Figure 1 (cartoon, one colour):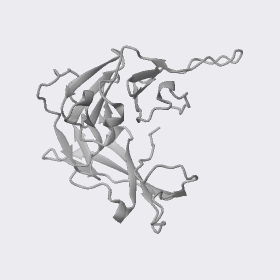
Figure 2 (tube, one colour):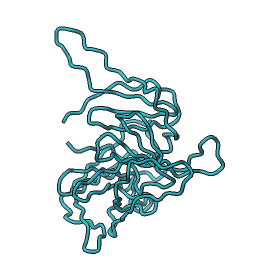
Figure 3 (cartoon, rainbow, N blue to C red):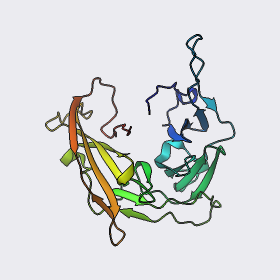
Figure 4 (cartoon, rainbow, N blue to C red):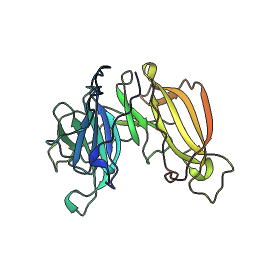
Amino acid sequence: MAVVACPFPETTRGLLSKPFYASVAGDRLFVMAYRHVEELGPQPPHDDDRPPPAWSWSGVDDAVPPFCPQYVTCQARHPDGRTVFASVAGWRPGGAQIRQQSTYSFDADRRGFRYHGEWLLPFRGEAHYDGELDAWVGLADEAAPGHVASCDVPSRRAEPAGEASEGPDCKVSEERLFDFDFESAGHLGATLVYMGGGSRYCLVECCAQSGDDDDDPRCRRRVVRMTTFALKYGKKGELRIVGRGGSASMAYTVAHDMINPPTQSPTAFWM
């Protein structure tokens, strides 16, 4: 596995709405911004005797997002490897009066979207498919902040628009994984990283350093805390946090003033 820098998609430049990125099919990256979908395929092979070939995004003309990507609250990749589910909260299609809470999927091979109903996945940010639990796992949404949640993987079958439908069965851990409150714990954001077999995970949490300037809302002095743990289902089917492993922390100072308000989650991945 390697980390590769890639060009930035042209259609997202100058747009005020937040783009939605999805990595599917192993070697393709999709970005959705406003009414656009662009795809970035594998990097072209390089020949030392020739100038490097162009590597750029290409528009997916037949795929128009049926929702506003900036309202995506969580995402999860289907175990088929080519489909990503996204929950979209609080958006108004076509200027509707009622804000909808919808879940859609995007099939990278079919280049199309499917509507799955008026329900939301129980996560915040990215969820991961855990083969041993046969479920998606992620940080719980605002209904249970600081906890871990799991849910069954829903069918890829589309639901007719306007028909009542129910989301998948969900579970929330009884034990809280971290203190989500800024006033008491300085919490700024958190990311859950799936470490692979054995249902092993790593929580990466960003917090303001103790004693930081209370008058500075940017919280430039920060601490990143990392904690590993495992998950399993108990005898009654409850989701349990077990096998807490090593932990580590790192203090740092944000190097510049152009930073977001104190609501950001770390970017982390497992290699």
